[in-house]
Length: 311
Image (cartoon, rainbow, N blue to C red; front, top):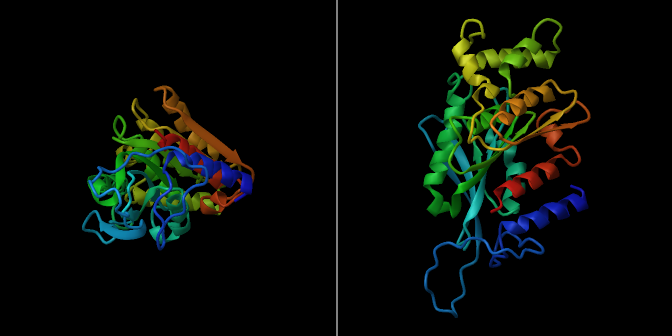
């Protein structure tokens, strides 16, 4: 990251946490932190007692019976703060990928002071849509129920999804009339409109466009939009915009196979209900994680998330 961008992100991170007790593997205090975070319910130790050191923890949590219904929770033992949460949802054409691919991104948000939950979900070969959205929502619900155990604020969380994971994240963000505690949704090259992807993957399409079309059909259980309109309607994020939905940020490359206009469709739908959505377009053709690694992209997302999770 560029030094100026990092400094900006760290300055914004001051709203998250004050310096913690030092200890083995403790997270470093953010420079210039002055805001006092919400404390955990205070015990009444002697004023001379030294609190135990804050220590990093990673806990594997099962939120369902299927082997893919697993998530890694990164939290801090002996912490004196209640922290906001960031959920990570990996990509992979809905048919592949794994939370292991998200370790470096997960670590970066943990170091900013968040509890971070890195989620696996059932793939299209395991179950058709909406199983993937259902899994994300159950992972969130399970985490919120375990708030006391992990020292997290169940009413302050964000979701960051990559590619197919961005589709799942946006689908959670527009489900019903808003989700309790959800403050922000970020999509990195998100597939917002499977119907558009299906159309783009027809005659004259690139290899990636054809592959995305096939992946969307597989997500619908092998059924195309003409034969299974109800499933495709459920998959189409802009159709579900409503009052109470979460603010969103979507980033794309200008010439990637999941083009910015997919997100612009959702932005127009959300605007009808007064919900803010920002769509950022970057030069080039990079998609998903390679786009995230381009200069300025990760920093832009971090600043936006920090701003939306602050009190």
